[in-house]
Length: 87
Image (cartoon, rainbow, N blue to C red):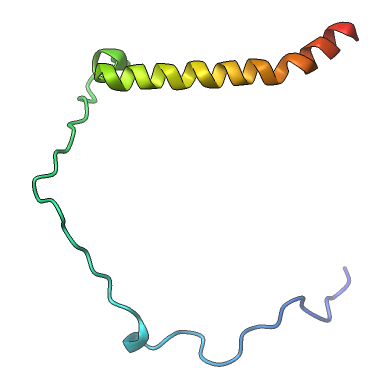
């Protein structure tokens, strides 16, 4: 195997790590302490029907999104399917 003489990119020169005092501290701000967290369904029954757990407006939005994406997918495949059928 041939040896590589040059690298494509030169290694950075100087300090490899920033000094600790130059690192910016991470700040976390809590804006709403009474945030409602939706409880997850119990994991006792993994095959539980999600449609019985998810709220109706969310299910309706999911249904609309899936139908729309399916229609777009079918439309995008029409030319390819016609070519396949014609041979």
